[in-house]
Image 1: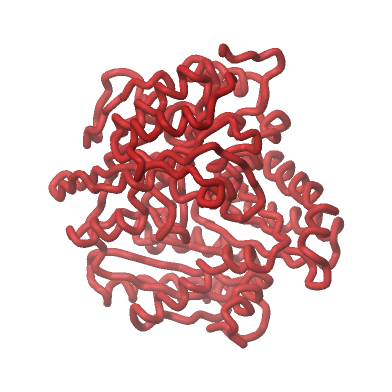
Image 2 (image 1 turned 90 degrees about the horizontal axis):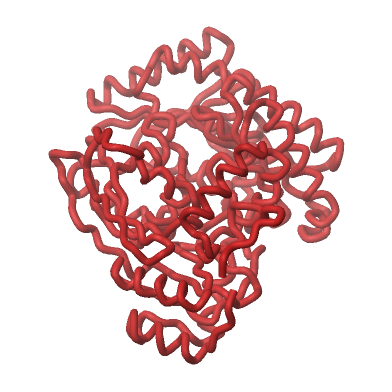
Length: 484
Protein backbone atom coordinates (compact mmCIF):
# COMPACT_ATOMS: atom_id res chain seq x y z
CA UNK A 1 0.00 0.00 0.00
CA UNK A 2 1.16 3.58 -0.62
CA UNK A 3 2.23 5.83 2.22
CA UNK A 4 0.09 8.85 3.10
CA UNK A 5 0.22 12.00 5.16
CA UNK A 6 -1.92 11.77 8.27
CA UNK A 7 -2.62 15.49 8.19
CA UNK A 8 -3.65 15.38 4.53
CA UNK A 9 -5.90 12.40 5.27
CA UNK A 10 -7.59 14.25 8.14
CA UNK A 11 -8.22 17.24 5.88
CA UNK A 12 -9.67 15.08 3.11
CA UNK A 13 -11.96 13.19 5.50
CA UNK A 14 -13.22 16.43 7.05
CA UNK A 15 -14.06 17.67 3.56
CA UNK A 16 -16.08 14.50 2.92
CA UNK A 17 -17.86 13.71 6.21
CA UNK A 18 -17.46 16.98 8.11
CA UNK A 19 -15.53 17.65 11.30
CA UNK A 20 -18.26 15.97 13.35
CA UNK A 21 -17.73 12.81 11.32
CA UNK A 22 -14.02 12.52 12.09
CA UNK A 23 -12.27 11.11 15.14
CA UNK A 24 -8.60 12.06 14.96
CA UNK A 25 -7.12 12.04 18.47
CA UNK A 26 -5.31 8.82 19.38
CA UNK A 27 -7.05 8.49 22.76
CA UNK A 28 -10.46 8.84 21.11
CA UNK A 29 -9.55 6.35 18.37
CA UNK A 30 -8.58 3.62 20.84
CA UNK A 31 -12.09 2.19 21.51
CA UNK A 32 -12.50 1.65 17.76
CA UNK A 33 -9.28 -0.36 17.30
CA UNK A 34 -9.76 -2.89 20.11
CA UNK A 35 -12.20 -5.78 19.77
CA UNK A 36 -15.07 -6.75 22.06
CA UNK A 37 -13.03 -9.43 23.86
CA UNK A 38 -9.94 -7.18 24.01
CA UNK A 39 -7.85 -9.80 22.23
CA UNK A 40 -7.12 -7.93 18.99
CA UNK A 41 -5.46 -4.51 19.20
CA UNK A 42 -4.85 -2.36 16.15
CA UNK A 43 -4.10 1.18 15.05
CA UNK A 44 -5.72 3.67 12.68
CA UNK A 45 -4.91 7.25 11.67
CA UNK A 46 -8.58 8.25 11.77
CA UNK A 47 -12.12 6.99 12.34
CA UNK A 48 -14.42 8.30 9.61
CA UNK A 49 -18.14 8.31 10.42
CA UNK A 50 -20.22 9.05 7.31
CA UNK A 51 -23.99 9.65 7.29
CA UNK A 52 -24.88 8.70 3.70
CA UNK A 53 -23.94 6.14 1.07
CA UNK A 54 -22.59 8.99 -1.03
CA UNK A 55 -20.20 9.97 1.74
CA UNK A 56 -19.11 6.34 2.09
CA UNK A 57 -18.47 6.24 -1.66
CA UNK A 58 -16.39 9.42 -1.48
CA UNK A 59 -14.30 7.97 1.37
CA UNK A 60 -13.77 4.73 -0.57
CA UNK A 61 -12.77 6.62 -3.70
CA UNK A 62 -10.23 8.73 -1.82
CA UNK A 63 -8.73 5.66 -0.14
CA UNK A 64 -8.55 3.83 -3.45
CA UNK A 65 -6.61 6.67 -5.05
CA UNK A 66 -4.15 6.79 -2.14
CA UNK A 67 -3.79 3.06 -1.43
CA UNK A 68 -5.36 3.26 2.03
CA UNK A 69 -7.15 0.28 3.51
CA UNK A 70 -10.66 0.52 4.97
CA UNK A 71 -12.06 -1.43 7.90
CA UNK A 72 -15.89 -1.22 7.95
CA UNK A 73 -17.20 -1.23 11.49
CA UNK A 74 -20.63 -1.38 13.09
CA UNK A 75 -21.05 -2.04 16.79
CA UNK A 76 -17.59 -3.68 17.00
CA UNK A 77 -19.02 -6.85 18.54
CA UNK A 78 -17.09 -9.28 16.34
CA UNK A 79 -15.97 -12.42 18.17
CA UNK A 80 -13.09 -13.10 15.75
CA UNK A 81 -11.41 -9.72 15.31
CA UNK A 82 -13.20 -8.93 12.07
CA UNK A 83 -14.10 -5.32 12.85
CA UNK A 84 -10.77 -3.81 13.96
CA UNK A 85 -7.67 -2.89 11.93
CA UNK A 86 -4.26 -4.47 12.29
CA UNK A 87 -1.39 -2.73 14.08
CA UNK A 88 0.22 -1.27 10.96
CA UNK A 89 -1.85 1.93 11.00
CA UNK A 90 -2.25 1.70 7.22
CA UNK A 91 -6.07 1.39 7.29
CA UNK A 92 -8.77 3.77 8.44
CA UNK A 93 -11.82 2.68 10.41
CA UNK A 94 -15.08 3.43 8.60
CA UNK A 95 -17.65 3.41 11.38
CA UNK A 96 -21.29 3.42 10.22
CA UNK A 97 -22.99 4.28 13.52
CA UNK A 98 -24.22 7.67 12.19
CA UNK A 99 -26.03 5.91 9.33
CA UNK A 100 -28.88 4.93 11.64
CA UNK A 101 -32.10 5.96 9.91
CA UNK A 102 -35.08 3.69 9.34
CA UNK A 103 -36.11 4.56 5.79
CA UNK A 104 -39.40 2.70 5.44
CA UNK A 105 -41.69 0.18 7.08
CA UNK A 106 -44.09 -1.52 4.67
CA UNK A 107 -46.59 -3.47 6.75
CA UNK A 108 -48.46 -4.91 3.77
CA UNK A 109 -45.22 -6.15 2.20
CA UNK A 110 -43.80 -7.15 5.61
CA UNK A 111 -40.50 -5.31 5.07
CA UNK A 112 -38.32 -2.75 6.80
CA UNK A 113 -35.76 -0.66 4.94
CA UNK A 114 -33.00 0.84 7.06
CA UNK A 115 -29.43 2.06 7.06
CA UNK A 116 -26.62 -0.22 8.14
CA UNK A 117 -25.84 1.69 11.34
CA UNK A 118 -29.20 0.96 12.99
CA UNK A 119 -28.76 -1.32 15.96
CA UNK A 120 -30.57 -4.61 15.95
CA UNK A 121 -32.59 -3.49 18.99
CA UNK A 122 -33.72 -0.34 17.14
CA UNK A 123 -34.83 -2.40 14.14
CA UNK A 124 -36.79 -4.75 16.40
CA UNK A 125 -38.43 -1.87 18.27
CA UNK A 126 -39.54 -0.13 15.07
CA UNK A 127 -40.94 -3.38 13.72
CA UNK A 128 -42.81 -4.08 16.95
CA UNK A 129 -44.32 -0.59 16.94
CA UNK A 130 -45.76 -1.45 13.53
CA UNK A 131 -47.20 -4.72 14.82
CA UNK A 132 -44.46 -6.81 13.21
CA UNK A 133 -41.46 -8.85 14.29
CA UNK A 134 -37.93 -8.72 12.97
CA UNK A 135 -36.91 -12.15 14.19
CA UNK A 136 -33.12 -11.99 14.47
CA UNK A 137 -32.34 -12.58 18.14
CA UNK A 138 -28.81 -12.35 19.55
CA UNK A 139 -27.42 -11.26 22.90
CA UNK A 140 -25.67 -8.12 21.63
CA UNK A 141 -28.85 -6.63 20.13
CA UNK A 142 -28.41 -3.32 21.91
CA UNK A 143 -24.96 -2.67 20.42
CA UNK A 144 -24.56 -4.74 17.25
CA UNK A 145 -25.66 -3.05 14.03
CA UNK A 146 -27.55 -4.28 10.99
CA UNK A 147 -24.54 -3.85 8.71
CA UNK A 148 -22.47 -6.09 10.95
CA UNK A 149 -25.30 -8.61 11.22
CA UNK A 150 -25.38 -8.79 7.43
CA UNK A 151 -21.62 -8.88 7.03
CA UNK A 152 -21.35 -11.89 9.34
CA UNK A 153 -24.63 -13.54 8.28
CA UNK A 154 -25.71 -13.46 11.93
CA UNK A 155 -27.82 -16.30 13.29
CA UNK A 156 -28.88 -16.43 16.93
CA UNK A 157 -31.57 -18.24 18.81
CA UNK A 158 -34.47 -18.04 16.34
CA UNK A 159 -32.75 -19.50 13.26
CA UNK A 160 -34.69 -22.71 13.77
CA UNK A 161 -37.91 -20.92 12.84
CA UNK A 162 -36.88 -17.91 10.77
CA UNK A 163 -33.40 -18.55 9.37
CA UNK A 164 -30.27 -16.40 9.59
CA UNK A 165 -29.66 -12.99 8.01
CA UNK A 166 -29.26 -14.49 4.56
CA UNK A 167 -32.85 -15.76 4.72
CA UNK A 168 -34.11 -12.51 6.22
CA UNK A 169 -32.67 -10.18 3.55
CA UNK A 170 -34.47 -9.10 0.38
CA UNK A 171 -32.30 -6.23 -0.89
CA UNK A 172 -29.07 -4.34 -0.24
CA UNK A 173 -27.31 -1.09 -0.97
CA UNK A 174 -23.54 -1.56 -1.19
CA UNK A 175 -20.59 0.74 -1.86
CA UNK A 176 -18.21 -1.22 -4.06
CA UNK A 177 -14.40 -1.15 -3.75
CA UNK A 178 -14.15 1.17 -6.79
CA UNK A 179 -16.47 3.73 -5.17
CA UNK A 180 -19.60 2.97 -7.16
CA UNK A 181 -22.90 2.48 -5.34
CA UNK A 182 -24.95 -0.62 -6.14
CA UNK A 183 -28.49 0.01 -4.94
CA UNK A 184 -30.99 -2.82 -4.99
CA UNK A 185 -33.34 -1.86 -2.18
CA UNK A 186 -36.26 -3.88 -3.48
CA UNK A 187 -38.65 -5.74 -1.24
CA UNK A 188 -39.08 -8.59 -3.69
CA UNK A 189 -39.42 -12.21 -2.70
CA UNK A 190 -39.14 -13.32 -6.31
CA UNK A 191 -36.58 -11.89 -8.72
CA UNK A 192 -35.01 -14.31 -11.20
CA UNK A 193 -33.36 -11.67 -13.40
CA UNK A 194 -29.79 -12.90 -13.11
CA UNK A 195 -27.25 -13.47 -10.34
CA UNK A 196 -28.54 -12.79 -6.84
CA UNK A 197 -25.69 -10.41 -6.03
CA UNK A 198 -26.68 -9.65 -2.46
CA UNK A 199 -25.38 -13.04 -1.37
CA UNK A 200 -21.85 -12.02 -2.36
CA UNK A 201 -21.86 -9.40 0.37
CA UNK A 202 -23.83 -11.16 3.11
CA UNK A 203 -21.28 -13.02 5.21
CA UNK A 204 -18.23 -11.49 3.47
CA UNK A 205 -17.30 -9.35 6.50
CA UNK A 206 -16.75 -6.18 4.49
CA UNK A 207 -14.03 -7.70 2.29
CA UNK A 208 -15.97 -7.23 -0.96
CA UNK A 209 -17.81 -3.98 -0.32
CA UNK A 210 -19.51 -1.91 2.35
CA UNK A 211 -23.18 -2.55 3.06
CA UNK A 212 -24.90 0.79 3.68
CA UNK A 213 -28.61 -0.14 3.72
CA UNK A 214 -30.90 -3.15 3.49
CA UNK A 215 -34.46 -4.32 2.99
CA UNK A 216 -35.29 -6.99 5.56
CA UNK A 217 -38.21 -9.33 6.03
CA UNK A 218 -40.74 -8.86 8.81
CA UNK A 219 -43.30 -11.35 10.09
CA UNK A 220 -46.55 -10.90 12.03
CA UNK A 221 -45.88 -10.21 15.69
CA UNK A 222 -46.65 -13.41 17.63
CA UNK A 223 -49.49 -13.02 20.08
CA UNK A 224 -48.49 -15.94 22.29
CA UNK A 225 -45.27 -17.30 23.80
CA UNK A 226 -44.70 -20.37 25.93
CA UNK A 227 -41.29 -21.04 27.47
CA UNK A 228 -39.93 -23.88 29.58
CA UNK A 229 -36.54 -24.78 31.04
CA UNK A 230 -36.24 -28.54 30.87
CA UNK A 231 -33.93 -31.02 32.61
CA UNK A 232 -32.76 -33.79 30.27
CA UNK A 233 -30.53 -36.82 30.99
CA UNK A 234 -27.90 -35.98 28.37
CA UNK A 235 -27.10 -34.11 25.18
CA UNK A 236 -28.30 -37.17 23.28
CA UNK A 237 -31.67 -36.92 25.01
CA UNK A 238 -31.85 -33.24 24.05
CA UNK A 239 -31.43 -34.05 20.35
CA UNK A 240 -34.11 -36.73 20.57
CA UNK A 241 -36.41 -34.29 22.38
CA UNK A 242 -35.96 -31.79 19.55
CA UNK A 243 -37.07 -34.39 17.02
CA UNK A 244 -40.09 -35.23 19.15
CA UNK A 245 -40.92 -31.52 19.57
CA UNK A 246 -40.76 -30.95 15.82
CA UNK A 247 -43.29 -33.72 15.29
CA UNK A 248 -45.58 -32.41 18.02
CA UNK A 249 -45.27 -28.63 17.56
CA UNK A 250 -43.90 -28.09 14.05
CA UNK A 251 -43.37 -24.45 13.10
CA UNK A 252 -44.42 -23.25 16.55
CA UNK A 253 -40.90 -24.02 17.84
CA UNK A 254 -39.09 -20.69 17.97
CA UNK A 255 -36.02 -21.72 19.95
CA UNK A 256 -34.44 -24.87 21.33
CA UNK A 257 -31.29 -24.04 23.32
CA UNK A 258 -28.94 -26.54 24.97
CA UNK A 259 -27.07 -25.67 28.20
CA UNK A 260 -24.42 -27.93 29.75
CA UNK A 261 -24.08 -28.40 33.53
CA UNK A 262 -20.87 -26.33 33.65
CA UNK A 263 -22.43 -23.58 31.51
CA UNK A 264 -25.38 -23.29 33.91
CA UNK A 265 -23.07 -23.31 36.95
CA UNK A 266 -20.99 -20.51 35.41
CA UNK A 267 -23.94 -18.26 34.62
CA UNK A 268 -25.48 -18.79 38.07
CA UNK A 269 -22.18 -17.73 39.63
CA UNK A 270 -22.03 -14.74 37.26
CA UNK A 271 -25.56 -13.68 38.28
CA UNK A 272 -24.88 -14.35 42.01
CA UNK A 273 -27.60 -16.99 42.18
CA UNK A 274 -27.28 -19.87 44.64
CA UNK A 275 -29.38 -22.19 42.50
CA UNK A 276 -31.22 -22.25 39.23
CA UNK A 277 -34.90 -22.84 38.47
CA UNK A 278 -34.22 -26.59 38.36
CA UNK A 279 -32.22 -26.66 41.59
CA UNK A 280 -28.54 -26.96 42.51
CA UNK A 281 -27.83 -30.36 41.01
CA UNK A 282 -25.67 -30.12 37.84
CA UNK A 283 -27.61 -31.29 34.81
CA UNK A 284 -28.09 -30.85 31.10
CA UNK A 285 -30.89 -28.39 30.37
CA UNK A 286 -32.84 -27.22 27.36
CA UNK A 287 -34.64 -23.91 26.98
CA UNK A 288 -37.66 -24.34 24.72
CA UNK A 289 -39.76 -21.49 23.34
CA UNK A 290 -42.93 -21.83 21.28
CA UNK A 291 -44.60 -18.86 19.62
CA UNK A 292 -47.74 -18.45 17.57
CA UNK A 293 -50.91 -16.50 16.88
CA UNK A 294 -53.47 -19.04 17.97
CA UNK A 295 -53.74 -17.77 21.55
CA UNK A 296 -51.91 -18.21 24.87
CA UNK A 297 -53.93 -21.23 25.94
CA UNK A 298 -53.33 -23.11 22.72
CA UNK A 299 -49.60 -22.35 22.67
CA UNK A 300 -49.21 -23.33 26.32
CA UNK A 301 -51.12 -26.54 25.71
CA UNK A 302 -48.85 -27.33 22.78
CA UNK A 303 -45.78 -26.89 24.98
CA UNK A 304 -47.33 -29.13 27.62
CA UNK A 305 -47.94 -31.83 25.02
CA UNK A 306 -44.25 -31.70 24.05
CA UNK A 307 -43.16 -32.04 27.69
CA UNK A 308 -45.60 -34.86 28.38
CA UNK A 309 -44.47 -36.79 25.33
CA UNK A 310 -40.85 -36.19 26.33
CA UNK A 311 -41.52 -37.46 29.84
CA UNK A 312 -43.14 -40.62 28.51
CA UNK A 313 -40.09 -41.20 26.30
CA UNK A 314 -37.71 -40.72 29.27
CA UNK A 315 -36.27 -37.60 27.65
CA UNK A 316 -37.64 -35.07 30.17
CA UNK A 317 -36.74 -35.43 33.84
CA UNK A 318 -38.11 -32.13 35.15
CA UNK A 319 -39.31 -28.78 33.81
CA UNK A 320 -40.11 -25.23 34.88
CA UNK A 321 -42.72 -23.44 32.78
CA UNK A 322 -42.78 -19.63 32.72
CA UNK A 323 -46.11 -18.27 33.93
CA UNK A 324 -45.74 -14.71 32.58
CA UNK A 325 -43.46 -12.40 30.60
CA UNK A 326 -41.32 -11.63 33.64
CA UNK A 327 -40.56 -15.29 34.16
CA UNK A 328 -39.93 -15.72 30.43
CA UNK A 329 -37.33 -12.95 30.63
CA UNK A 330 -35.75 -14.56 33.70
CA UNK A 331 -35.37 -17.92 31.96
CA UNK A 332 -33.93 -16.33 28.83
CA UNK A 333 -31.48 -14.29 30.91
CA UNK A 334 -29.87 -17.53 32.09
CA UNK A 335 -29.17 -18.50 28.49
CA UNK A 336 -28.21 -15.08 27.17
CA UNK A 337 -25.75 -14.24 29.95
CA UNK A 338 -23.51 -17.27 29.34
CA UNK A 339 -21.37 -15.42 26.78
CA UNK A 340 -20.79 -12.42 29.03
CA UNK A 341 -20.07 -14.71 31.98
CA UNK A 342 -17.25 -16.31 29.99
CA UNK A 343 -15.83 -12.97 28.92
CA UNK A 344 -15.76 -11.68 32.49
CA UNK A 345 -14.25 -14.91 33.83
CA UNK A 346 -11.54 -15.03 31.15
CA UNK A 347 -9.73 -18.04 29.77
CA UNK A 348 -12.49 -19.40 27.55
CA UNK A 349 -11.58 -21.13 24.27
CA UNK A 350 -14.51 -20.21 22.05
CA UNK A 351 -15.22 -22.75 19.33
CA UNK A 352 -18.23 -21.71 17.26
CA UNK A 353 -18.84 -24.86 15.22
CA UNK A 354 -21.74 -26.43 13.38
CA UNK A 355 -22.40 -30.08 12.64
CA UNK A 356 -25.43 -31.97 11.33
CA UNK A 357 -28.06 -32.02 14.07
CA UNK A 358 -27.94 -35.81 14.11
CA UNK A 359 -24.24 -35.63 15.03
CA UNK A 360 -24.40 -32.94 17.72
CA UNK A 361 -24.46 -35.22 20.76
CA UNK A 362 -21.70 -37.41 19.34
CA UNK A 363 -19.61 -34.33 18.62
CA UNK A 364 -20.07 -32.98 22.14
CA UNK A 365 -19.16 -36.33 23.70
CA UNK A 366 -16.03 -36.88 21.59
CA UNK A 367 -14.87 -33.26 21.73
CA UNK A 368 -15.26 -33.26 25.51
CA UNK A 369 -13.11 -36.38 25.76
CA UNK A 370 -10.44 -34.81 23.55
CA UNK A 371 -10.35 -31.61 25.58
CA UNK A 372 -10.32 -33.33 28.95
CA UNK A 373 -7.33 -35.34 27.78
CA UNK A 374 -5.55 -32.03 27.21
CA UNK A 375 -6.74 -30.30 30.42
CA UNK A 376 -8.42 -32.73 32.86
CA UNK A 377 -9.83 -30.10 35.27
CA UNK A 378 -11.29 -27.89 32.58
CA UNK A 379 -14.89 -26.66 32.80
CA UNK A 380 -16.97 -27.79 29.84
CA UNK A 381 -19.03 -24.74 28.97
CA UNK A 382 -21.13 -26.05 26.10
CA UNK A 383 -24.32 -24.46 24.81
CA UNK A 384 -25.97 -23.57 21.57
CA UNK A 385 -28.74 -23.62 19.08
CA UNK A 386 -29.69 -27.28 18.84
CA UNK A 387 -32.26 -26.61 16.16
CA UNK A 388 -29.68 -25.51 13.59
CA UNK A 389 -26.68 -27.62 14.59
CA UNK A 390 -24.70 -24.70 16.07
CA UNK A 391 -22.60 -25.71 19.09
CA UNK A 392 -20.81 -23.06 21.14
CA UNK A 393 -18.18 -25.43 22.44
CA UNK A 394 -16.27 -23.17 24.81
CA UNK A 395 -14.05 -25.01 27.31
CA UNK A 396 -13.19 -22.71 30.24
CA UNK A 397 -9.97 -22.66 32.23
CA UNK A 398 -9.82 -24.50 35.56
CA UNK A 399 -10.55 -22.13 38.45
CA UNK A 400 -6.98 -22.34 39.80
CA UNK A 401 -5.29 -21.50 36.49
CA UNK A 402 -4.85 -17.95 35.21
CA UNK A 403 -6.60 -17.04 31.96
CA UNK A 404 -3.50 -15.93 30.05
CA UNK A 405 -1.39 -18.88 31.18
CA UNK A 406 -4.16 -21.31 30.29
CA UNK A 407 -4.76 -19.92 26.80
CA UNK A 408 -1.04 -19.74 26.03
CA UNK A 409 -0.53 -23.33 27.16
CA UNK A 410 -3.45 -25.18 25.59
CA UNK A 411 -5.71 -22.74 23.74
CA UNK A 412 -4.50 -23.68 20.26
CA UNK A 413 -4.56 -27.40 21.04
CA UNK A 414 -8.17 -27.20 22.25
CA UNK A 415 -9.24 -25.23 19.17
CA UNK A 416 -7.58 -27.78 16.89
CA UNK A 417 -9.20 -30.67 18.77
CA UNK A 418 -12.70 -29.21 18.45
CA UNK A 419 -12.45 -27.77 14.94
CA UNK A 420 -10.87 -30.84 13.36
CA UNK A 421 -13.53 -33.05 14.91
CA UNK A 422 -16.32 -30.79 13.64
CA UNK A 423 -14.91 -30.96 10.11
CA UNK A 424 -14.64 -34.75 10.35
CA UNK A 425 -18.41 -34.76 10.99
CA UNK A 426 -18.88 -32.70 7.79
CA UNK A 427 -19.29 -29.59 9.90
CA UNK A 428 -17.87 -26.05 9.90
CA UNK A 429 -15.33 -24.26 12.08
CA UNK A 430 -17.49 -21.12 12.05
CA UNK A 431 -21.24 -21.40 12.40
CA UNK A 432 -22.26 -17.79 12.99
CA UNK A 433 -19.34 -15.70 14.28
CA UNK A 434 -17.56 -15.39 10.95
CA UNK A 435 -13.88 -15.81 10.11
CA UNK A 436 -12.27 -12.42 10.72
CA UNK A 437 -8.66 -12.83 11.84
CA UNK A 438 -9.24 -15.51 14.44
CA UNK A 439 -10.29 -18.25 12.01
CA UNK A 440 -8.65 -16.93 8.83
CA UNK A 441 -5.55 -19.12 8.66
CA UNK A 442 -7.50 -22.23 9.63
CA UNK A 443 -9.19 -22.05 6.24
CA UNK A 444 -5.96 -23.28 4.66
CA UNK A 445 -6.37 -26.48 6.65
CA UNK A 446 -10.10 -27.01 6.37
CA UNK A 447 -11.11 -25.54 2.99
CA UNK A 448 -10.26 -27.28 -0.28
CA UNK A 449 -8.02 -25.46 -2.73
CA UNK A 450 -10.97 -25.32 -5.12
CA UNK A 451 -13.02 -23.40 -2.53
CA UNK A 452 -10.13 -21.10 -1.69
CA UNK A 453 -9.39 -20.43 -5.35
CA UNK A 454 -13.01 -19.45 -5.93
CA UNK A 455 -12.95 -17.14 -2.92
CA UNK A 456 -9.65 -15.55 -3.96
CA UNK A 457 -11.03 -15.09 -7.49
CA UNK A 458 -14.10 -13.24 -6.22
CA UNK A 459 -11.94 -11.05 -3.98
CA UNK A 460 -9.57 -10.16 -6.81
CA UNK A 461 -12.43 -9.44 -9.21
CA UNK A 462 -14.19 -7.00 -6.88
CA UNK A 463 -11.28 -5.66 -4.83
CA UNK A 464 -8.11 -5.99 -6.94
CA UNK A 465 -6.16 -3.59 -4.72
CA UNK A 466 -7.01 -5.52 -1.57
CA UNK A 467 -8.16 -2.45 0.37
CA UNK A 468 -11.47 -3.75 1.72
CA UNK A 469 -11.02 -4.95 5.32
CA UNK A 470 -7.49 -6.13 4.53
CA UNK A 471 -6.23 -9.25 6.27
CA UNK A 472 -9.69 -10.55 7.13
CA UNK A 473 -11.45 -13.77 6.07
CA UNK A 474 -9.06 -14.85 3.31
CA UNK A 475 -5.64 -16.30 4.18
CA UNK A 476 -2.69 -15.07 2.15
CA UNK A 477 -2.48 -16.72 -1.21
CA UNK A 478 0.92 -17.99 -2.35
CA UNK A 479 2.37 -15.71 -5.07
CA UNK A 480 -0.80 -13.65 -4.98
CA UNK A 481 0.00 -9.96 -5.37
CA UNK A 482 -2.75 -7.34 -5.39
CA UNK A 483 -2.30 -4.48 -7.77
CA UNK A 484 -1.21 -1.26 -6.07
